[in-house]
Every structure is written in C-alpha cells, then in structure tokens.
Amino acid sequence: MKRQVAQYEYRVLSFTRQTTRREALERLTEHAEYGHWELARTRIGMGGARKVWLRRKIIRMQPTL
Image (cartoon, rainbow, N blue to C red; front, side):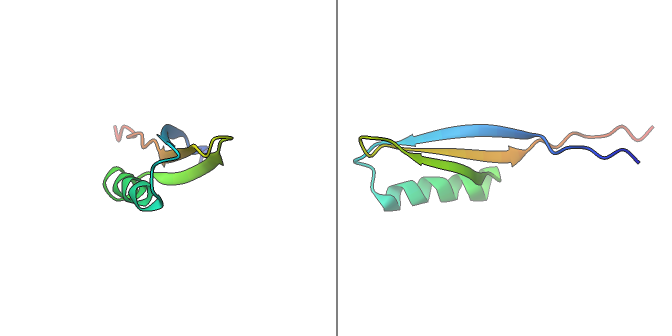
C-alpha cells in the first residue's frame, strides 16, 4: 500500500490594527465552519496588523476501476 503525504491549500487573511478581536474571530469562525479551514499560522506585524494563514486538505478522488 502506498502512503500519501497530505497536501494542503492555503488562504491568507489580513486584519488591520483597527479590526477588533471579535470581528477577526467571527471571520475566522465562518471560514472554519463553512469552508473547513484550520488555523496554520498567525503573525503580528510592526504596526499591529495581523496576518493569518488558514489551510485545508486537498481531497483527491481515486478512480475505482
């Protein structure tokens, strides 16, 4: 049996310094619930801007014939 390495697709969300924690949490929750995204990485920049990387598995259908 051949073992496959999981492949992911990524999406980057940016939040300005003026974005409240509640607004950011609501956007991240929507992506997680409806798009099946999971948190991969978070980075806070010098000016307080936040960048969030989300990822989800790429599911490939295997032929059954």
